[in-house]
Length: 251
Image (tube, rainbow, N blue to C red):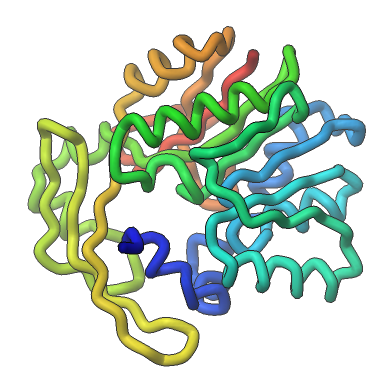
């Protein structure tokens, strides 16, 4: 049986590229470049690359990038876009829970909840972080975004549900304060015009959890920042109003 995220991304690549949250790519890659000191020798892995928007922009700027994703449909779109831009990127269908890279990448990015924290168990989410840590070189850097548990904590559950920013229709949403998981029924129309009803389940993380998880994987420096669309900056502190958090971790 396929999980909800597999069903969602089975035929959603074109619709995905039209989503409002995909429009900040240039500013986000500007931040990534600054974080790695514009070092073109960096070998970059994009976990949960989707349709390749960050991978392609990084490759345009001269970086060597490998993009992996679980969805064949999203990768097909990514390859088409790269070909149209005359950009060479290795796009590989792979499950982030089962990677065997070891000390191969100077930078790993996991953006827009492409893998972590969509998994159905905390152990699976941790495995993705562990695999990313293993894939990094000794002084490597991990940059990822994740759902910010401070947001639903600070707001009432009712307000949290009403502020769901998804462009689809969410019904019967329930946030569990014991597990920090939000379950909802989500209606979406795919690229073929078919309507799907999905039972979604996403994990929110509070800052202390993220710090503990990364420290357990031997990351030495961990910074948690606010996550404004296309305007990532070290000047923007994480607050209870941020739906997502931006995480920068150094080995």
